[in-house]
Image 1: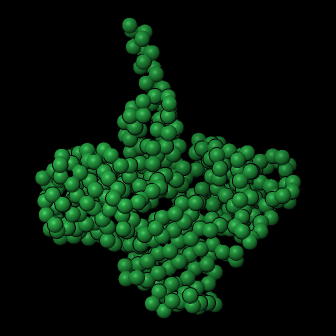
Image 2 (image 1 turned 90 degrees about the vertical axis):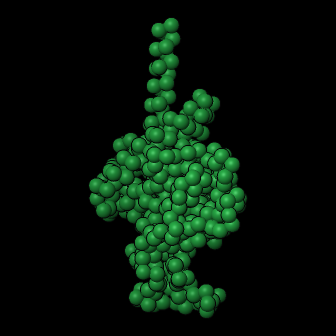
Image 3 (image 1 turned 180 degrees about the vertical axis):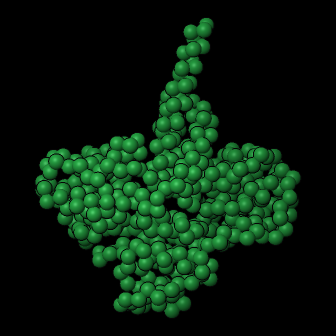
Length: 414
């Protein structure tokens, strides 16, 4: 009997370690928000144990690991090795290579799929990438190995030297023996920042309750909540602040329900079973709307929203989001994640309707102001820093300083 108990204890300890290791890597990769990490953990261990058990263990681990990550990143240098790696990849793309980070699941799939990254009508001399397993080894401290080559022909030493030079120019340490059959190793400390929804944690409360969640309009992707029973604190902390415009969520508890929608940086809740009027709170205060279902009170007036705000539609790394709220930091992070030689773009509106749009085009990063009233756009090829400033001013000052951009601006009519 004691031996059987010990075996179960060891098995449970092994499961916890598997979950902890997987969660730690996912948090460090900084690609998925908290709820999506839990879902990925369940998928990772599918068929090995009870999914409910994995979910129950994963949530506190995700919260702990994410909290530790946020505390650590506050002490990181302004520019990390991971930032330098991304900058080197942008340089390589500008030079005519398809450079992709965390691309494909493995080397074989990456080599097979990298040619598909070249948009129709464009050309590329070659490629450089590291895949998901490489990224995970980078998280574990082993550095990152790059695969490189030419499209449609054997790799050459010249392209390897070009890649190594771009990495060294960013201050990174490169290990490569000069042979085309050897991958390029980059020694680095893996540090990728989380902001916005990637930094969101469940709302810190002592009176959490289970609610039944129903999406009344379509919302898909890793940012969307799962329908069914959920924690109110998780819904309020991880999903409601980024509710897309036009999407309504119904949250029910013990026969009472609230239908939540977003306008700008506020959330509005309607209570069909109680009265017809809507109550308004800040978009980070959705838990106040749910508390009324349990007899709690809601502030009479709208709480002040975040100090900066954008309404954005964007696409990057194959992910598309429409009419979602961002702050300046999250917009800058998305901008840096956009890939040259791709179809990635970001369109952001300020509170008063001013609009900034950025997209990677053949000649570089196109930055423009869209004037919907006049059906015109004014802009030019810009640097990442110039685009970051334009988005930050729009978010924090609610204006588009296109005239301050300087250079040869081009105005086009739609």
